[in-house]
Picture (cartoon, helix red, strand yellow):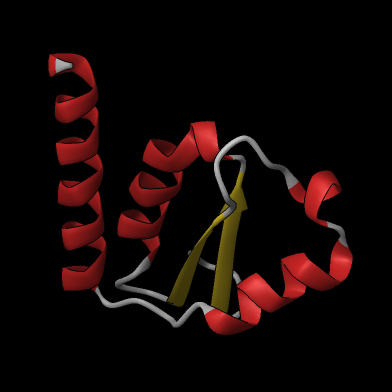
Length: 84
């Protein structure tokens, strides 16, 4: 938070979506935050540098309400998965 950087890009493996959103929610009041999700069952090494950079470039910076909506949609996915 005290860093002079103004933009934060969070890109974690698909199994860490919850942690990425949590971190973004903590930072969004202080920095411009972008949360990039990789396709399921893929990591940066699978995609390669150019595909990863495309994902980062095509993902927009988020506001607090965007992150809350993302968090809620993630919980809906988890509930549906558990119920089936």
